[in-house]
Image (cartoon, rainbow, N blue to C red):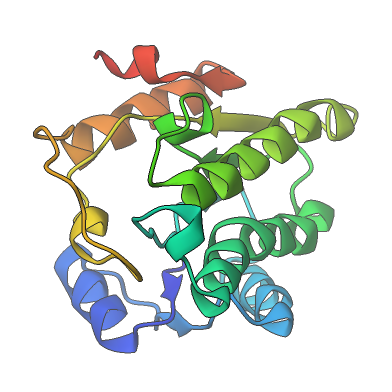
Length: 197
């Protein structure tokens, strides 16, 4: 397994927690060349790829009229174009493997005061579902996972606005288990309802 992300300290902490021996790879999903670099690093470290899970993301709260251009640009770069670049870079190495995009409930049920976030997640969901057909001949399993609010802490770290009061979210470990089962059973789609809500 290769751990990758833009916060080197957090990566080191996770790496130590799970006992991973390989050095985490620091990269920024928002920079176009970094997607190729992280995939090349993973291929070198692992001797190939079994799969890619797009679980990165940022969130912004507030009406579209309130969002600044930098916030909108960061949402698009982190939640849409960055994951698509990673997928594109990984495709040549994934014959018989899998791709998972965690797009979330907002991809199927857009939320007021989260219109831009809903839009980028819906865009990634649409691309992921199209890739099911594009990559069928290569034997790549492509899965769009849309869990409801999950207690990852994302809502407490918005790049703009303030989170509204939210009900207690799902346990991240349970969400991960549902996604793993989806991969193992060949699912192409996990709607919010598939996460036991």
